[in-house]
Image 1 (cartoon, one colour):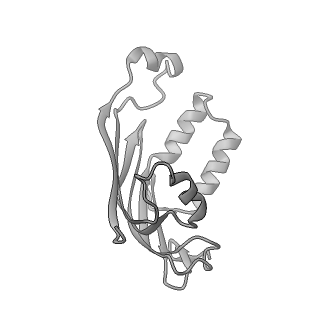
Image 2: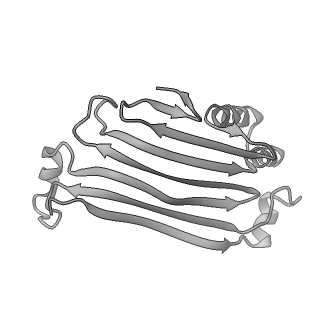
Length: 179
């Protein structure tokens, strides 16, 4: 069909636990939280397919010929929630993509939209991984710097981040223009 069609990716699991025997192998002193791992990722997109996927003899050729065998028109992050080991990440957002503007973002369709994320326990988790010698202090420092560049500390170990891309292609992270 030439019309935009919805594609969806959803994966979720709750209360995934690791046996105590496994915990004892890499964390015998119980430095990390033993709370179960939870994950819920729910994404949907509006796509247009410019090739006939069922024409298996010509799919490879069509992919090589078409600049965009699949056109992305919109992307929605309905849920992106992951928690475990004392830390959590939750994000939502929505973007539309202008397939006629491939110049603003150097060959990529120009996005417009907003996304936000909240992270808790990230710094404590990094400290615990250093204590377990699973992460070097210098590596953790680099991670903290990267996190600090794109998030705000709202206190109590909570970090938030927002990304907005406007119609002109300006990118704002936490209200500050970065592009």
